[in-house]
Amino acid sequence: MKKEVICLIDDDKVYQYTATKSIEASGVVQRVLVFDDGETAYTYLVENLSTRNNLPDIIFLDINMPYMDGWEFMEEFVKLKPKLSKQITIYMVSSSIQEEDIQKAKSLQEVSDYIIKPIDTEMFAKVLGNS
Image (cartoon, rainbow, N blue to C red):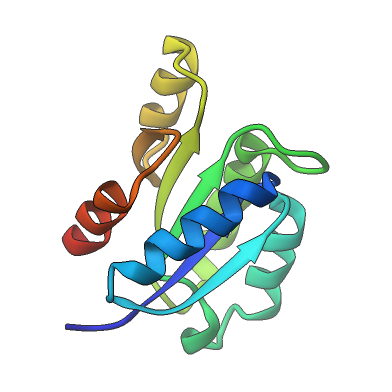
């Protein structure tokens, strides 16, 4: 089984810690990249466009963050996607259960699914096992 590079983009430090531990517990992870906001993560992607091994296989993207939120990140990602040397799967992750957020996420072709926080180890294992 191939080891995945996972990227967490979320400003909640407690969630970053627990999610990283849950992802690592899945056993299918090569490494976990963690970013506090969309802007920092986007910059990382731009800087690593052609370095396939540095790019994530999967991004877990929070909606509400400072500087560049999840929606703004997706706007930029759509433009960047054709230049990336690797296909990246994106899951929008949020504590929001607003139908409008869920529908907006599902309307984006680049978003694989909308996952409501908190995400437990089982959910990460299920998502990572299906990738």
